[in-house]
Image (cartoon, rainbow, N blue to C red; front, side, top):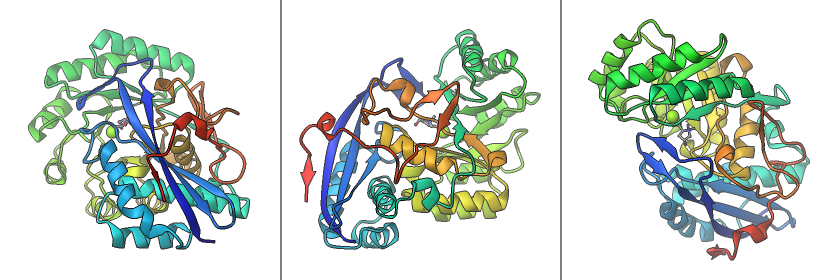
Length: 366
Ligand code: 0XW
Ligand code: MG
């Protein structure tokens, strides 16, 4: 089975129920890139990559398009399988995991359709038929944060992420204390500064909330700062943006730099690399989330299929952009969060069939 054609679509995702506010900015709309891979067996696989604007990490929408333009022609006529394709992409373009991930996901979708297996089955099998989501509460004041904690608890969420990194550590601590006071027993809380804090601010925050068992997610910007925090915090430390590749995750676990991850499938390069991270986290008994930066039904399906293969006791949940998107790609229903939980899609591959007319004319066709 070889790749016969690759089409790339740019699709705008307006942010509804927003704005979505994190330390890197406020989002009103994002451009996602959808990749359609057609094989010579007549089957089609879909992938997606949607950077969270140009500031969340070194990735941006036009970079996705440029990377796909660079690599797609070299993939034509080659094996429509994830690992040969990744080897070829790595020879064709250095880095750019967030771009390669879209091709990888499409090839897992295609492989599933060819073999009649779901993506979660291809990844070793779903441990359960539905998985918990988590909701990320935007950067805001203590009282509205507490109100949303109570609201999401009522909806059925069992985990929340509180955005911090306001530039005022005392205020961040007040927000987290208000969230903790509002939570019901059993609700897991993590505080995510998206790299906005210094090591000093992180240590001060950890002192201010020393009595609250809230995990700190990616407070600082670099791995050097992460290493500097080792042994100086009262809280579990999860890494997100700095886990830029599998080797960095291996090092972070091997050197005991973190207690868990906020993992994005596109940042790590797709489902194949995410499976390696999943298995390393399992060996380390580290907590992981399986999310992505943003995106619609295709990336959501990839996250849910992968999330379903993570041991429940090590799973932080899967964040989806779905609450901020006003449409599905698949007219028969997309991936929904219901009472804080997400059903694993059924059917071969990703279990999602996009209505291609939604996306307009392709920006690239080879
Ligand atoms: C909360 N997320 C999963 C959604 C945004 O992409 C940011 C990300 C995070 O954990 O930082
Ligand atoms: Mg994060």
